[in-house]
Image: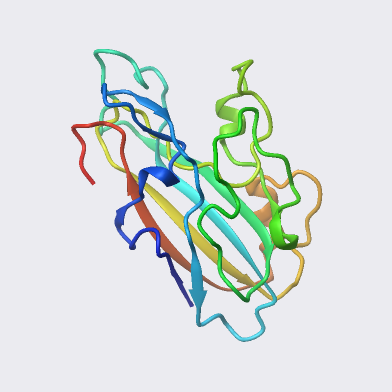
Length: 208
């Protein structure tokens, strides 16, 4: 089972037009085009009836104290945690995902869901919690929202796209599709998986 992209090669930088934020030329950040990348798959296991796609960043700071603060950096030594950027379920095993098909802009207060293109359903990503205290941005963020690492982080962030092949046409879960709900519903139905990793950083002193 393989997962590939015309947008970026495995282990290479994700283009800025696929990011939630891009450099603003002043060492900080501004909103980007937020287009989902192209994704294609091959060699699916026999009996695959649907696919689940999850994208996460395992490099998110566990403490927000230094995040995007003038005169400070987020140290490389800081413990890190996962941040979910995309949950997509009930994806047909035929075809591929076109760039910009599921997201083509930053949507304040989040994209609606869970219903998505082509009969898919999209889960809640972690921008939902990130913007919970922001009156202008708060809401449920369904589907894809791309990279926006701290502009003062000392490390490159890794964005891991993982495709799961299932033996059911519809994921046995309803309602609000959080990461925990989706992972629980996949248990007992997983036939195989494949991953693709892109890199991204906003800090001008960090190269990827």
